[in-house]
Image (tube, rainbow, N blue to C red; front, side):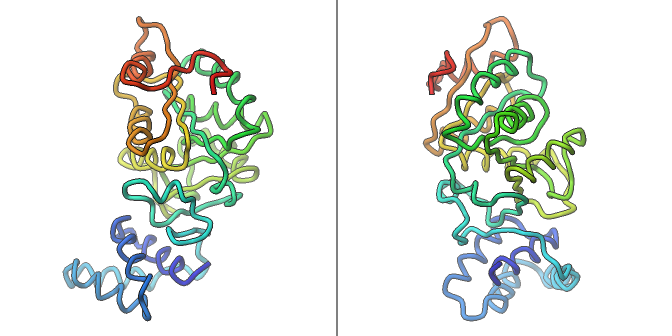
Length: 272
């Protein structure tokens, strides 16, 4: 672990450091002879004295043993992810970090998905695992099924979470998260003890899209979070594939609209 990574971890664990500030510190580090001194000078210029002193106090309380993480400049950091808007400055991880450098495809969809998604994922994953690492968000429904089918088919999977890696959300995915940590990779930009928050999930979705060459959407309602992932993927020139569904079902609205707007219709299991 580099000194820059260690410093960023300690900064992030104060709970006061935004991703954008950490990206600025990384820029400072590139030509810095004394990183901490120059980082403190930068923070003093953007924070008032009280906030800066509070930060220093929290920084002193950092644990001696830091959790594993990589920063934007590390060799292990995937190039595709560097190209997105506001890329994560720091990624905490548990598992096979080398999976970040493999070809990835995301499978996402509704939390309250139907058996249609389950069957589609069951048909797709065996055809994908020899070519791609499967990426998803460890949420209920489609995300969980994507991870489970990948593990069942002896494939590689990456879970991107919206909380610290010492926590589990949703709680019922405790065993699944542990399986992925043991056999694949779990990553998060959030430090230990940081609970899940509804604002974290759109941020998590940008990482899912950023890691992946392609994104598959199985089922999604009109305002599904999966559509955020699809939109982010399109913004970053990634292919979005949507599985069409019956026009009279609310869970088909999102995918059918994506297809109408130009996403690739995924109409058979060999269409990849």
